[in-house]
Length: 106
Image (cartoon, rainbow, N blue to C red; front, top):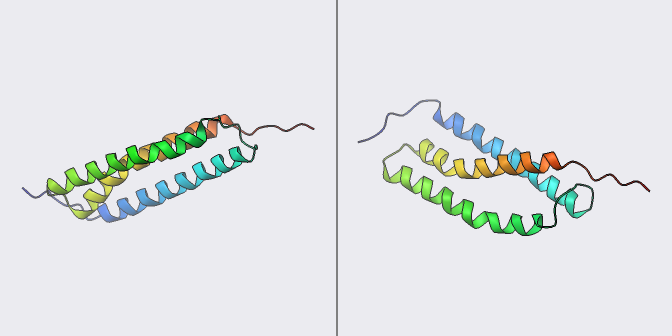
């Protein structure tokens, strides 16, 4: 049975996309600052940023595939696929933001 489609769904998907993009750039900035010794990241952060991607991408693919197989609208399929990625980028940005800068006193 086809689901009812909301006319603003594509706009919401676009907004979610931009939120995820901004969070991802924030996370990258925190991690690069950590690599340069300017942000108080933990040594495990470099491994974590590699290991988290396959798991999240599999979750995203499964969510999008489930929505597609259920007959969801294209915007709903995109939204379902982006949700796990958005959860991870938001969590990473919050976690890394709480660490704060590494104060270098000469």
